[in-house]
Image 1 (tube, rainbow, N blue to C red):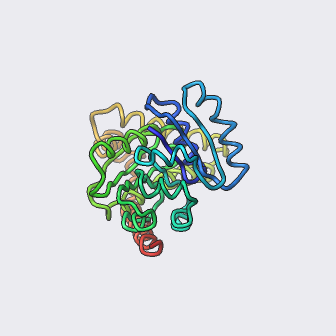
Image 2 (cartoon, one colour):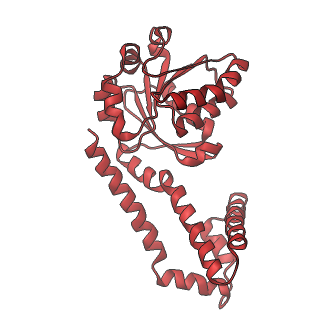
Length: 284
């Protein structure tokens, strides 16, 4: 398997790190990245490790090697540039990169860019959309995947294998639901961070120090997730088990319900989903 990244930012770096830590049969990884500082950082971080695994690693400001373009049908091109930059990056690609985009398999990790748009810009219908999230940076991500109808079963398996290098994967049958994936898991880490912010600030308002409140909030979240993963019960059942009638937890949950907590979360996801739909229309 040969890989070519169009864009070398944080998510590309996370994926490359995951690939090098995996046992996937990768022969070559090339990154097209215009920023010299980013290219240097990628080389410094990954070149030596790639060599130890017998993988050829290289970067370039504009194009890919002719040797990679010559075997384009066996290459995965990973679009890792910002959504607003993808159209130009694909339609203005250099000679060898253009060969990859038109003949290889394309995996896009950009939010809100439809298969139809990607197909038109790349001149290719072997497109898989992926929506990872930032915990992929530490190998704990989750990625929603959608494949165009022309993507083979083998290519779908390879796409899943690639994204599983940085976490779990979930296949989505309807492309329109990728906006829901973006709203839930793609943007989801920000909601969690916001919740931890709220817990920490509330603890401070009750008299705890910033450090004390932060430790208590973060460890509470980590412990609750560990308990949920190890339990046969779902979140609703676990919530009920820790809620004594007339107790402190019941009082807190009643306050959340009165404030419309569940509805607020649903409204937030709808807002994110709707923005994703707008982006799909904007980036055509």
